[in-house]
Amino acid sequence: MPAQPESVGAIIAAAGLGRRFGEGDKLFAPLAGRPLIAHTLMAFEVCRAVDTVVLVLAEENLERGCQLVDAAGFDKVAVICPGGPRRQDSVRLGLEALPECRWVVVHDGARPLVTAALIEAGLAAAAETGAAIAALPLADTLKEAAEDGLIMRTLDRRNLWAAQTPQVFERELLREAHRRPDSVGEVTDDAALVEALGRRVKVFTGSARNLKVTTAADLALAQALVAEGGEG
Image 1 (cartoon, one colour):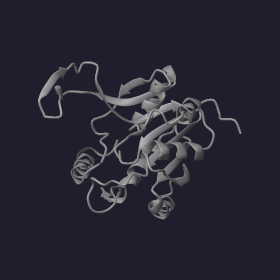
Image 2: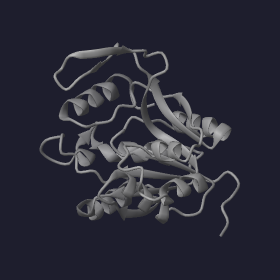
Image 3: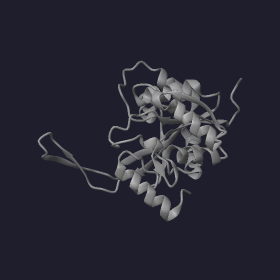
Image 4: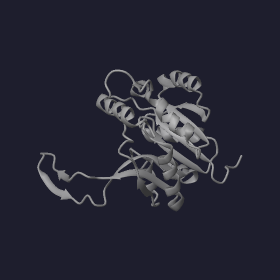
């Protein structure tokens, strides 16, 4: 079945091992009374622009993920599938499982404070070039240092951004990027694969609240942000 002109699918990449988090699985760690991943999924569930969602989990979390989705009534989650050894493998597998759509939103499952407004901003930005990523301009002074710790130079931060997700792509563009021979090597986001094609990727302003939970300290910060201002 051909995709509708503006149909939108989402891939939630949540198959990482979370080695830096400590004990337990960060995706199912409690955040404001619900598992962390439930907050992420809720943002896509309430976003009117998103039609369908694929949740990509580690093999050992598949049953737990299915139970969570059923209990919470996340109707947009069409598929829950296992990921691969690397992030880009997991996104590729999610892309293969995703029902036909025109646009694909890729988001880190461990960024639970994403909002529907941020997802929609990404879709608007991607309409210009076919690809767009949330990012924040860097505020700190950046130093490049040698292996011995001695500073080599100070970098101009004016054009530097810290990448986040959501990242939004035309589905066919993302497919092409993931079909390339594995000459690019391991990458930490899908924009790098699209950039390797020579395609333009638009930056749109992300959110400082849209943090990625990597450590227990990050989870504590997310708890504080939810407590002070909700998730919207």
